[in-house]
Image (tube, rainbow, N blue to C red):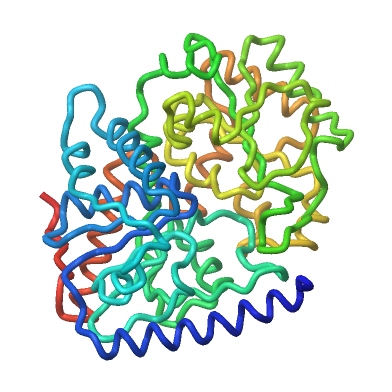
Length: 416
């Protein structure tokens, strides 16, 4: 089947699946349970949300997974980070979560019966809820990248969107054809893991020196045979690009003792060998017993581009730099959200080798990188540094939304 015919078939299937689900919801009263799903099974927005619900929900909490054993291990790993060396609250919550296989008997039925559903990338074609139910789109970040593309048809019927900033959160809702009355509530839950990470000795399991600064480089993918259902190519692959800024960053980090580490996107097919930068995959991070957002929380600085990861990282208050050598071609191919990236964070761009050397020097000295530009970006997006639990703030807002729209708290207890 050609890619175009496959997309048409997927759209038709989606229309039929959504109609079936809504008819079932209309016929069956909602059950006192919450259902959470993430993609992949290690997606920390879903895992932290499941733990928060297990701490605060009066009903059963189900976590949908492609591989339940993987999801269970990831859930326990996240709970360990959130509890720290002296806590047990999240470990106890993890024990309350029931992990169910996505393709298991009864899972679709549990989805349509649940009064509260929260997912990251859509679930069962994401129908609009009816009859006293509330669905929440946790998504996977609210960054500068436009979330729609020509190779994927995505319609999210949830009536609530969790986003860590409102300007680009609105764009996420628009790209995903969410209902006009979609309410944006505070997120992302996974930031709780990043802000709780403290044990730098864990870096040694990745071959890194805990005593030296770590600068993570996390570009989004430009070419992938797996993304967008039929593959995508957007912008210019960075691995083979003649790039004096990247070359200068590699040299400056080596000269100052900063550990520059490439964390590749799970969809990335690019080859970065030419750069000579140590690289990590998601599988490498998990095999070392860490979570991705734990690694982020242990990093001293971050270089990224169109990915939402740097918008999450803003909450640490640590150095953030953007490197976008293919900005024009990427914007033509994929598209960027409004307000424009340069308007939001233009002062954080690495434009030349001197900027790369400035960043490496700041990391080596343990000092800020362009603090005025960072403050302007935080203000433009409305992101706060540090603070309390993002998951609890999100559930507070979901609870309030349910009370206003449905007249029920959906079993979510007020925060203690």
